Image 1 (cartoon, helix red, strand yellow):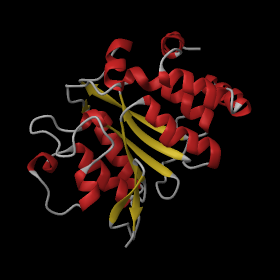
Image 2 (cartoon, one colour):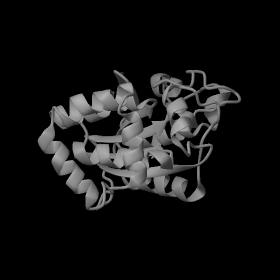
Image 3 (tube, helix red, strand yellow):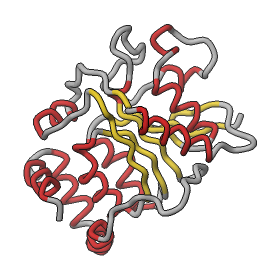
Length: 229
């Protein structure tokens, strides 16, 4: 198993997320855990077929993509997006060039739910556990720092979520202390997607666009669901 992954797991074991993952995933779902570890060892969770979007799909957007100057009107280390809540019409200046808004609009056209990701604890509660318990999500496209790739691949493999992981290329966390600070909401830098990653993301979402897309989102807990009326 990847040495960086083992180090991450060891350092997280006594944190809230690590202990919750052990108790609520590994011990509560031992069969899924064994199968997931085997699946991860065979190559992770990269989707073998084109991402389909639609029901059961999720687009995860790191909160650190939110604008810093001028500041996001919804605040930064949270799951909220003002545009997702009021619609894609007129919106404040910080939202006009915001990548979160742009990704969300494409996700809506693909019929996918959207999740602004903050902490590992919340990902566990909002995405991983609902999928283990009732098959909430079958596929995902997630933007995140490269340091998080292997832990996320393992978690997704255990939950049975096929995923495409799109890396931040600038301003991202490169080690555990930086990751830990961001995981607790301390991330003053704005992350950016590289040109290749952005092209891959937009191409993936565009290919899944539906003929009669939903018109807006409705908020269900921390997740924005497509709403057709």
